[in-house]
Amino acid sequence: MDTCEEPPIVSLVPTYSKDPQAKMSAQESCLSLIKYFLFVFNLFFFVLGGLIFCFGTWILIDKTSFVSFVGLSFVPLQTWSKVLAVSGVLTMALALLGCVGALKELRCLLGLYFGMLLLLFATQITLGILISTQRVRLERRVQELVLRTIQSYRTNPDETAAEESWDYAQFQLRCCGWQSPRDWNKAQMLKANKSEEPFVPCSCYNSTATNDSTGSDKVFFSQLNQQGPRAKLRQTADICAVPAKAHIYREGCAQSLQKWLHNNIISIVGICLGVGLLELGFMTLSIFLCRNLDHVYDRLARYR
Image 1 (cartoon, rainbow, N blue to C red):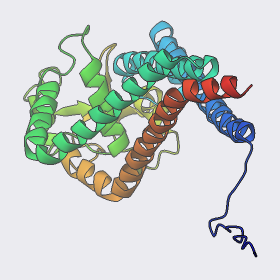
Image 2: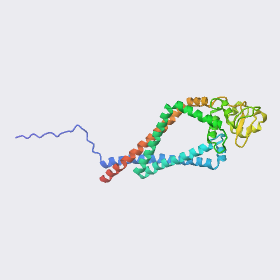
Image 3: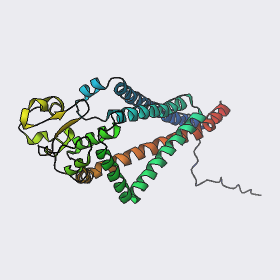
Image 4: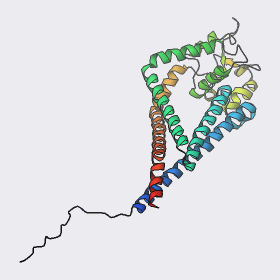
């Protein structure tokens, strides 16, 4: 009696017999790449934060040498020294969490690093929404703040942070006052007698409208007092002023600010998107590394 043998069953689905240990080694290599990538980039930001903190400390310790090094006449030193110092410390702290957490593979530090980045990202999104939806109220608030700063200009020598910031804004935007130079008629310290012409701060002075070839930093501080009757500089230890009829910027800073925003809106949006994508990338890598460290290494220990 013939016996019929069944033909061997051929599977149409291809089978891959990879070594599990090789697969684990590939995952381990991927995690190592992510780990050192996070470490290197956070080390860069740690050094950057240290430099920012050093600049802020330099301003606090020696303002004169910093102004000479920067080469600008109107720098809001009191404001920027605190902003730079605090920003530098926060950047160093955040980068240190990323460096140590990635290098030592500590899940608690990686989770804290992810949480701080998420909080920073959410804060930026919230600020963007508030600026977009409350633009009219924000403009009104800025106008009130600027007019109040102009009215109390140099009345208190111990509180000049807002005045230095506004001088710097006028100098950079090439403008004078909020709506026009006439806004400076409200300044108590710059009010002239009835027989004198009104004065405005030296940050309103338009050095490019004259034939003076000296730099703008020398014009405002050391050159104007050597120009004689042509400039009619009135300068004390606290106030530097020029006549309102001199070569000053005639456009208000409200119009100049709108023009600046219109000309640089693409750059501003690009920078914001770049920072946001960078934060999202670091958050993704940190949470991926945090969630897969124990899982991969436990499986590797099991196969070994």
